[in-house]
Each structure stands twice: as structure tokens, then as C-alpha cells.
Image (cartoon, rainbow, N blue to C red; front, side):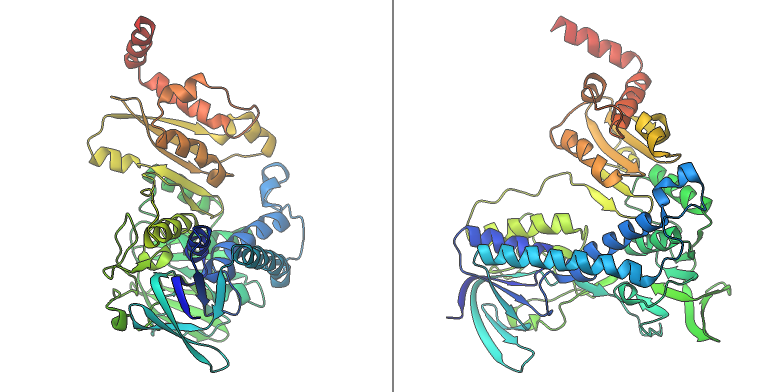
Amino acid sequence: MNQYDFVVVGSGPAGRRAAIQAAKLEKKVLVIEKGTRVGGVSVHTGTIPSKTLRETALNLTGWRERGFYGRSYRVKQEINADDLRRRLLITLDHEVEVLEHQFSRNRVQQMRGTARFLDAHTIEVSKEDGEVLQVQAKSVLLAVGTRPFKPSHIPFDGSSIIDSDEILEIKELPRSMIVIGAGVIGIEYATIFSALDTVVTVVEPRDTMLDFIDKEIVEDFTYQLRDRNMKLIFGQTVEGVEKVDGKCRVTLKNGRVLTAEMVLFAAGRVGATDTLNLEAAGLEADNRGRLKVNPDTFQTSVPNIYAAGDVVGFPSLASTSMEQGRIAARHAVGAPAHEPPQFFPYGIYAVPEISTCGLTEEEVIQRAIPYETGIAHFRETSRGHIMGLDSGMLKMIFSLKTRRLLGVHIVGEGATELVHIGQAVLNLKGTVEYFVENTFNYPTLAEAYKIAGLDAWNRMGELKVEKVERRAAE
């Protein structure tokens, strides 16, 4: 009764997609989830909550209308934590309901409890009521996700010195906040609370932030943050955090002391693998609890055990995790599986959004590829005028030799939606001519692709003439 073709540990994006894929291939599938509800980190503390919080903040503050009505404009004058939590709970309930229905209609079995290996094919599940069961699995997928990294020298108290999970449970919106860590999670929450008119200071030990994003996009993004009075402190490590007279005090290595009502520590995450008893299965995690896998199949060093999602490291996106889970499931049950796509979009749901796909300008230079760029500012589009946008830009990079699109990078309103046009052209090996010769709906922000395409086309100079003459001769 407890023998399965495919056992999935964790029900986040990678786990859910893998389980449903295996079930559609008529395999007997079990999902083990230690939480009280399915969905994993993505649904309960990560992707969905943070994006819901962002959308609620932008709606209630009237952020998107301030270009017309001024920085003091607000839809709701007094915004509190309950306003944010109310919409969050409705969204989470809907997400869980949809996921439960997907498991039910695909006949995916579920089990609540904590999983640990006894050997590579045997998993022991400890339930909350004390019952302990054993299940046998032909193949296993570990999709356990990550949890916030919490160093011992930070005195977390769950209320004013918190991690990125605890921020969803705060009772009051702080007037001031110090965010330690300028990675994706730290920057997302820093900019969301800044939009809520919290005075935000970001501290980052590196000299830059978001190093995997095109430098020009990061420079534009940084300018926008500083323009709205966010303080960004780079190249400084935190020596200590303490509570003094009801305030949080952060001491930096250079001796500088910062104070705020709340401190958010968002400097990294660790894989939730410590309770799995990996040694019994012949596996070993790295110092951040992550597992090494074959990037094409997501198979670990133990042939019947796979891992996908945040637990395998970068890019740690819900979207890529889903594909990783699906590919792993197909490979695990012996079905044909395609290789992961070469280019995938990366979305950062900050305020403003950033999204990117393909090569950055720095990567193109490193590879010694002759190139040209095209840029469009959202204020150049009629849709941008209608929306009152005074910021936002789209940048495309093209090869001078093949004229193919090499990368698309966007910062501004709707960036995570707009990027998919560039993603399609990238993966279909399209050229600058696509953007120059095709018609885009008017007025839309997507028109920025036409503007940026023409900008690059014009900068290519005589090369474009040679291209036209060659096509005419053909």
C-alpha cells in the first residue's frame, strides 16, 4: 500500500509540477508536505505573499497615479498591517484551493509529515499526531525549498528584528526600517515598504547589488531609489544589531551607527535539507544546505533521487522551479524530457520592477561579441504618457554580425510582463528586423520594443544598408 513510483518531498512550484506531470504519465505519486497546507514556501512565505503585498501596497497608496497627482497622493490615507494581511489571506486561500484541486483531479496522493531517508528508496514520515509511516519509492524528488539564513549574532525577536518570513506577520507598519542585504528579497521588501512611505536604509557588504543584472539597468534602478530618498549603503558589513530604548540600533564595520524602528535581515537563504537524513541515502548538501544536480536532468549523485527548485540554487525562481520539476519527473519515470531552455526570464518584483532575459552587456563584452544596443524610455511612449510614467526603460542588445537579439533588459512598470516578447524573439533566434518591421498595438508599453529596435537599427549605420541591399538581391 505504501509503495509508489514517484515520491515528492515538498509541494512548492517544483514539487507540485513534478507530481502532476508524473501522475499524468499514469504513475502512482505521493507528495509529502510537512506544512499544514500545501504550497510550500512559494505560496505561504515567498513568491505569492511578497507579490501580493507589493500589489496591495501599490493599490492602497495610489503609487501608480502619483505621476499625475503628486507624491502626496494616496488612495487610502491611513494604511495599516491589517490592510495588507487581509488581501494576502484571500490570495493564499485561493492558491491552496487551486492546488488541492489539481492534486485531487490528477489523483496525486498527499501525506502530511516530516520526511527522512532510511535508504535511497525508503522514506520515513513522522506525522504531527506521532504516527510514523514508511513509504517505498522507485524515484524521489526533493523539492524542499529554502528558509531564511539566520546567523547567531543577529538577535531576532520576531517583531522588530525579523527575517523575510516573519515580515508577513508584523503587527504595525514601521516608520523606519533598515534592510540588511541587497539581494533580490531584500531589495523587493525595501522598495515595497518605501512605497508605503517607510523611511528605508539598505546595507550591503558588497560594493554593488544585483550583479547578475545588466549594469545600465541597475544604475537606472539605483537612481530611482535614491531619488525617492532611499538610503543605499554599499561596501559595509554589519558588526552588531541591538535594541536600545525601544529602537533598533545597527552598528557598521566603519563605526557608523544606524537606528530604525525595524530591522529586516535578508542576507541569504539555506536549503531545508537538515532533517532529511541525507547521509542514509548517500547524499550530502553543501554548507548552505543545497544539493548538486545534473543541470539537464536534475538528477543527484544517487541515480533514483532528484532535486529541483530553490534547494539546487540559482536562479531560485518559481517559474524555473516548475520547469525543473517537470523535467525531473519525466526523466525519473523514463519519459522523454527536453533540455531546459537556453534563455529564461528573470523577474525582480521591486518597485519599480526589473526583468531580464539573455546576455547582459557585460557578458557580451566578455565574450568579445561585436554588438549594438537600442534603448527606449517609457516616457517616449504614448501609453507611458497616459499612465503618467516619468521613469522606466527597455534595453536590447544585438549582434552586429548576425543581427540577432542577444539580450533584453527592462526596468519599470510592467517589466515582468513585457520581457516575454523579448524572450520569444531570443529563443526563436530573431533579429533586429523583427522589431523594426512588425507592428505593435498602440498605445501600449510594448511599443517600447519598436522604439528600441529602431534606435539600434539607426546606430548600426551602413550595416543596415548592406542588409537591405542583400535582401533585395535575394
